[in-house]
Length: 140
Image (cartoon, rainbow, N blue to C red):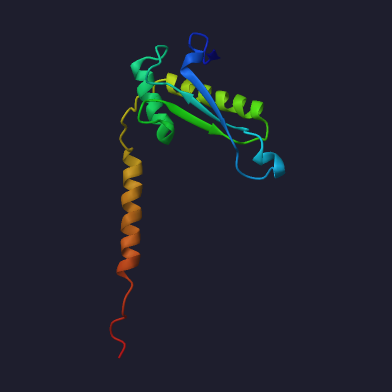
């Protein structure tokens, strides 16, 4: 059971952990111990998430969202299997927590009159500088 918020928790059947060998430095130990973890969350089949949350989660997950609707998080940050497992679960919880809050609707605004006038004045000033460039007339 992975607690996301006070009202939402993910069941163990939705999560699958697979341990693989980690890359990078580690000496002889790296060839013997599978410390990296691949955490797979069946997001599309989850009864604990609403369709709106699933859509936001799919957008936030990006490349981690698979074709069959699962999120795969791979962690190989530390040499400890237990620590990598905890990090993967924390990252999944943070991802789902971020998808729970709906985006704030954008309120379209117009530029102020003063900002428009300042922009146009700056453009005119720059155009004048560029217009004065070029060959000087009357010097032969």
